[in-house]
Amino acid sequence: MSTVHEILGKLTLEGEHSLPPSAYATVRAYTNFDADRDAAALETAIKTKGVDEVTIVNILTNRSNEQRQDISFAYQRRTKKELPAALKSALSGHLENVILGLLKTPAQYDVSELKSSMKGLGTDEESLIEIICSRTNQELNEINKVYKEMYKTDLEKDIISDTSGDFRKLMVALAKGKRCEDTTVVDYELIDQDARDLYDAGVKRKGTDVPKWINIMTERSTPHLQKVFERYKSYSPYDMLESIKKEVKGDLENAFLNLVQCIQNKQVYFADRLYDSMKGKGTRDKVLTRIMVSLAEVDMLKIKSEFKRKYGKSLYYYIQQDTKGDYQRALLNLCGGED
Image (cartoon, rainbow, N blue to C red; front, side):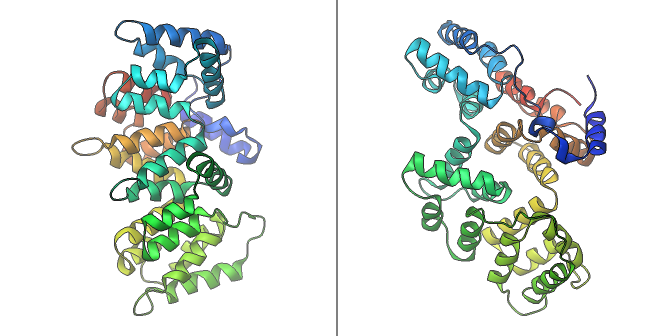
């Protein structure tokens, strides 16, 4: 088994563009996959007295999302019952949340997390911010489509009715998924102009021209904004993150901070979120579960590498210390072993 560092080193040399999407995934398609065999094993595990959680965890955390959809289909054909419903009644607590999350497609999972962040009294702004700030245009377009299919209303409408002021404007602008994705041209003049505009709209004046910040930060491409934030330091005595803390407060501050961190380095951003979910007393299991489920098939290898570099110990170690039982087993499988 080559180490994460060897894999990452090799990948960096070969260049990112030539890689299959699963190059940085910790969960990949299972080679000798047989949906009917898995469905039968799950049926037995669910019916066993006391429920065989180990089998359930080992099957579902070692199959790709597409394979899990096939297993659900085979299970329903076989038992005339829906797999999520059967597992919901067989499992409970944090383990149930992980397993049910794994059975949804990535867009369905994001959509259900967004919906639950906005339903009932009060909004879970943290979850709303994390998902909306970190997803790509393609992911956001799919989220908007699936949201409407699942809830017969627009995501934008729900955001509008659940948030207010400039925070609402920022979330609505991001949720549209209209960020420029043409990264072929480096426009140095525009980089300089945007950096100056961000400074003029904030630190340089009394009060903040928030719409100006929103426009630049939600419309420009990620590589462009990375250069803008670098350039910004030659105009402002504070970097972008410090400027945000000085200029805005509350949900808006939190959203801008999350957004800028995502733009600067998304994997470091998620490593920080994971660390924060486990440090100190009590684990914020909702955040921990969501990141592990959402990103195991995206770039978990990179996140693990950033985590270890920044916090000195591995993500695997932290999960081991902070969780227990079958819930721990599921998360460690998604984490993809000790690095």
